[in-house]
Every structure is written in structure tokens, then in C-alpha cells.
Length: 215
Image (tube, rainbow, N blue to C red):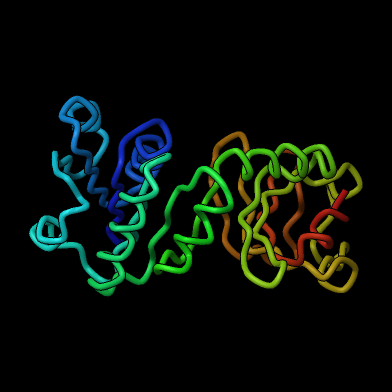
């Protein structure tokens, strides 16, 4: 399991750290405010009080190139930019940074952020997508217009097998797994003879416009 390092433990950062930790990640939670770090003591693998904009501290912590590093400094563009530069110099391959708006996003991408998240923008997209395709429960955007989505099967799918439905030829989507909403059990790569129940959630990959057609 790769290590996730979350720097900045406000609402955004602390919730990411908590969610990753609860899902089995080794999480290092860092903030320069002691009270923020204390709050995460039982919700992370390590909780450290430190000013992460100091490159020597990053080296002491032992951040590795394969770590996932999430930077959540809110409006402080100078701190986010400096930290991103340090992480890039340390060879970190995955640097995810929170930004308040597009101007900050462009600057952070220029200095080495691999992904920049504008929370309000992302939430607006999710709300809009949920209205456009109500049965798409969640999604993860990939490159070139592809997404991985959790989709509640429409009524016409219930009681049928994947062999009956021909999802790949009809919708150009691939089912990666099935999650039972009642037990939360996951079945990876279900067989063609798998019969879909109304409690099943389909985890699919495909182009966003094709996934929306699953309704």
C-alpha cells in the first residue's frame, strides 16, 4: 500500500486523511498547528507538527517519490507553490494540490502539481452530473474523457445477466466490479452469467457520455 502524505489539516485535508486512513492507507498527517495535528492523532498512521514549506523537514519526514502527497493550504498561494516546488525537487510523482480558483490552479500546474483540485468547482460538477444522470452515484474522472463510475442499474437490468445485456457493444462501457449495497461486498470482474439484483451497484469504466446512457 502506498503512503499518503496530507499537508494542511483544515476541513478538506483532514477529511481526505481520515477517508484514506479508514480505507487502509498509511497516512502521514502534517500541519504546523498543534491542535490540528492532535485532532488527527487517531485518524492517521503518523500525525506531525511541522512547517512543511521547509524542505529540510520534508527530507526528515522521509517523503518518497512513490508517495501520494496532498497539499491543502487554502488561499495561501505562496505556501502551496513553494511546497509544490520542494516536492517536485524531491522527485514526488503524485502531487495533488487544493486551490481556490483557476488562476492559482494554472500557477500550481506550472510548478509541478500533477493534479489541482478546486473544491467548489468539483462539487458543482458532481451536483450537475447527479441531476443529468441520477442513477450515476459517484464517478472518478480519468484522462481523455473517461470515468470510473458507480451506477445504480436501471429497472430494465434487474434479473438479467451481463450476457443478456451486451453492455460493451450497446453502451461502450466495461463492468469492472459489482458492489452489493446491502452487504458492501465487492465482486471483481463479474462473469457473463452473473444475474443483476436490485441491490447491486455497477462499477463501470467508459467515456462519460456513454456512462450517462446507462439509465
